[in-house]
Structures are given as structure tokens and as C-alpha cells.
Image (cartoon, rainbow, N blue to C red; front, side):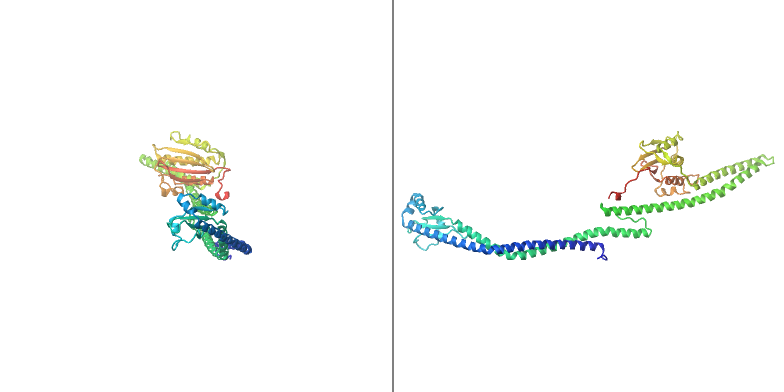
Length: 498
């Protein structure tokens, strides 16, 4: 069983559960059915005898009533009462006569022509005619001709209800029906049980397939995803679309893949930064050492020239100044290399980011920097000096990109687990293809410098546990978005709420 795939184990479990439940219910129902049929068989014999006796008594009563009606009919047939009743349309004298016989509830009326025709008499009637009212009506009807040689439609009808016989016959028919269907109940029960069992098994199979594939398909995707990650395909993601525990598992896998991608990117960047730091350190060391002798030697050449030729002295002076300027430029480049090569040593403390921004903006009174600072921003764990370097670098880049007519805006936003710092300018912006490259060392669009500024900015931000990304501003220009963590806050992941 354990060697079977999970989906087949789910299907087999549902079929076994359905079949077991159905069999248990069928056995219970069969027990009650057999008990009922057995009770019916025990009662049937005595019931049949009682009904037979009742039928005999009812039929005797029927024959007695029929004989009494025939006797009354003969008397009326021979008397003049019917003819007088026809003539006067008054049946009361005949009712008085019938009351003397104590026949109970009898009905008296004149016969219709259609009723007389239904008797199918051959010739003049020789006396009253007694018959049953209908196949399902045990009442007795007696037709008394008024004048055998008169009109064919001259007759009286006396109806005597036979309620007892009707009731007994209906009871006998019901009892016979129950005895008849009793033997068929077992066959019908087996048939319906078979139909219900097959239907339930099909339903169990469909539910098992749906549940099984609903569970195992995402698991297959997770297995495939782990294999893709093992093959270093960190961009593989599983499509989401479920809100249950499996959906949370898929979401966790995608977040793990995203974290791995982010970690690999950070690792590659860290390795690249480390390599550039080593190169910068060596370049700074190799370039810085000969700069001072070169500058001193050129100054000595200028100072020790003994000649009196003004033109040549001016040439030496100009060359000395050019070399000195270039040496100073090299010193600045060396200093950039040295600063980049030096790992930032953070001195963290609780500081207000808004205060740090305000202090830096005061250094640029003529830049017209717009501030949109959220007062609810909490204090952060910051190295204020390093953050000053970050802000100065971004502001300097913005001023150089926007020129005299440009504008720079700095915003802060408070979020549940982080604080965002936005530096927006109205310059030409950063092309989408370069938004990641600009944070790499030696990548710059400036006419001067070695492109170490934004690489150093990212290094400082990441050392604070934050992130920086470049994007396009809503109104055009560049937007640098810095995310810094808030101490003591952490967003609960969805799987922690299960």
C-alpha cells in the first residue's frame, strides 16, 4: 500500500470508506426489512382468517338485504302505489311503506330512461330487477316498473347502501396487495441497493480523483521546483491560486526561491564588491606612493631652473602647474579608491532619520530641495555619519543630473516593518537597463570620477540591513528608494497564522 502513489491511496481509501459505510447501512436496512416481513407473515394468517370471516358475514348480510328488497319490490310491483307516485310525483307514501320494513338508510327516486335502457330487458318486465350499483360500489339498486305495459321509462329506483361490504372488500384488497408486494420487497431492495452502491462508488472515485490530484499535483510541482532549484534555476516559480494550506506551502516555496535569488544576487554583488575593493586597495597603494615624489621632483625642476630665458621659464611653470593639477586629480581618485576599499565600520545608535535629512538639506540652501517628511517615522538604528554620506551622494547626483532648473524632493514613509526614504529628481532619469548596473563599481555617466559613489551607497545601506533600488519617478526623472528596517518590528508570515 505504501508503494502506491498518494493519489491512488486517497482514491482507494475513499472507495473503501464508501463501500464499508454502504454495506453497514444495507445490513441494518435488511435487518429491519426482514423483521418487518417476518412480523407481517406472523400477522398475515390471523388477519386472513378474520378478513375471510368478515367477507362471509358481509355477503350473508348482502344476500339478506337483497331478498328483503326483492320482497318489497314484488309488493310494490303488484300495488298501485308506484303508478300513483308517478302521477302525483309524490314519493312520500312509498317512503312510509319502506320505513315500516326498517331497512335503514335507503334512497328512493324515479328512474331515468338511460338507467332503464341499461337493464337490457327483453320484453315487458315480469317484476322488480335487483342489481349491484357498480364494480367498486356494493350498494343494491332495485328497479320497480310502474306499468309493465306502459312507458318504458316509468320505474322507481330504491337504493340500499352496503357500507360494510364495501369496507370489507377494500380491506381484503389491501391485504392481498401487501401479501403480493411482500415477496417483491427483497428483490427491489437488492436492486436499489445495487444502484445506490454503484452510484456512491462512482461518486467516491470522482471525489478521490479530484482530491487526490488536487493534493498531489501541487506536490509534483513542488518536487519539480526543488529539482529546478537544485539545478541552479532560481527563477523557477510555481503558479499560485489556492488559499488553503497547500497554497501557503506554494507561497513559502516561491518566497524561498525569491530569497535564494536575492541571496545569490547579494552574494555575487558582495564577491564583486570584494574584488573591486581589493583592486581599489592595490591601485590606491600603487598610485599613491609615487605621486608625492613626482610632485616634489616637478617643483624642484621649476625652482632650480637657473636660466634667464623668460619663455622657457614660463613653459616650465605651465608644465609644473599641469603636472601638479593632474597629481591632485590622481590624489582625489586615489582617495575615492581608498574610501571604497575601506569596509564601512558602523557606529549604530538610535537616530531620527528626519533629523539627519534636515541637517543635510541645510548644507544646500540654494538647491530648493522639497521635503515631505512623515512625522510618525520612528527612530532607527543608524550610523548618522554614514547616512550623511549616502544623502550627500544622492543629492549631489541629483543636482548634477537636473542642472539649474531641476528640482529634488526627499520623502519619508512609515510602514509596518520598515521606513522608506525616497530621493526624487527631475533629471533625465535612469534607463531601465542601467538601474542595476549603476550600483556596480566603475559604472558612471559623469565626466569625472570613477563611479564608486552609488556602489558605496548600496554598501552602506545593505550594512544597515536595508535595500536601495533605482526607478523612474512618476513625473519623470530618477527615483532612489531606500528601505530601512524598524527595530523590534517583524511582519508575521502567512504560515505563522495557521
